[in-house]
Every structure is written in C-alpha cells, then in structure tokens.
Length: 189
Image 1: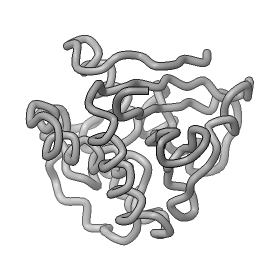
Image 2: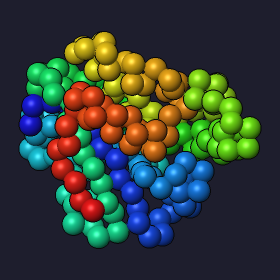
Image 3: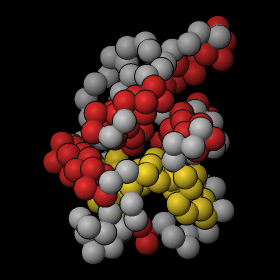
Image 4: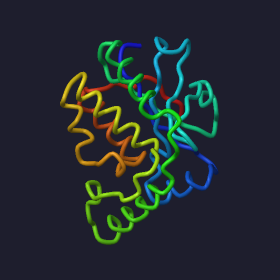
C-alpha cells in the first residue's frame, strides 16, 4: 500500500435506526465512511470509524459480509505522509463520542435542499458534540491538503466538517478518481 486509504460502505438490508434514516435523508450510494489504517501502523488493515465512539475495527469485519457492499479508494502519496495523517486522526479522535445530534441537522439539510433547492453544505450545523464518520473523512482530506497537496482541499471545500455526509463522501471520492487524484483499491458488491 502506498497512500492514504479511505472508503464508503452501504448496508443493503436492515441496519440500525441511524442507517435507515441515512438511506432516507442522504441517499443510497453509501451509509457509512471510514479510514483504513495501514499495515505499517498495525499488522493488518483496520478501519478507523465512528460508531457509538470512534473505534478501530479489523477490515476483515466487513469483508465477505453479503449484507455490506463497499468501495475502498487510495490517494497516492508517500507512505510516511499517509501514516502521519492516520496517526494524527487516531490521536485526535479515538474514543470521541458519536455525534448523534449532528444527524438532526442532516434532516434539516435534506428538507431545505429537497423542498427549497437551498445549498446547505456551508450552513452551520449547530450540533458540534462528537464526531460522525463523514466528518472523519473531511478531517482526513484537510490533512492530505496540508501534508501532501493543497488541491485536495478543493474537494471538501464545499462543506464544513460537520455538514458532509457519507453520500457526499462517496461522490467526492468518485470525483477524485474521475480526475485521477485517487484510484479504487478494493470493491465488494
């Protein structure tokens, strides 16, 4: 692996209450996003993701699960830079509580975008407590901009850290690939 690895997944059937709400108010391309920690940090690949708290889970937890489809992307860069970014995310956010109240704002965003065609991506989300999975992605890309190449900042610039959701993450990663700024690392349909 030579780069920063990020991904999105979609829970096909069921899922918890928050996953079901996400399918309604964000879209069906992705219900979750995560950062894959490199084997230089751990002996195998692990996911840094937001659940009840920020956790580290083996990538193997989602591999082969027929109820989950996922797409994992690699942003090419020096491995030392990718490891620095992962360690910074780990030390900054591990153990932080899940920002469940932030999700209320996403219903508000959907309502404004759907009914009034208002662009809400740069509007303030007043619920700042905790962190959600897509927020972790936003912080990762900001670090990529600082440590690797500022052009990556342009991909998350339309959002604030707490106004981007997993479908936005999916679309952003797809745009990055279309522009040659990342590549697909692994897919499970």
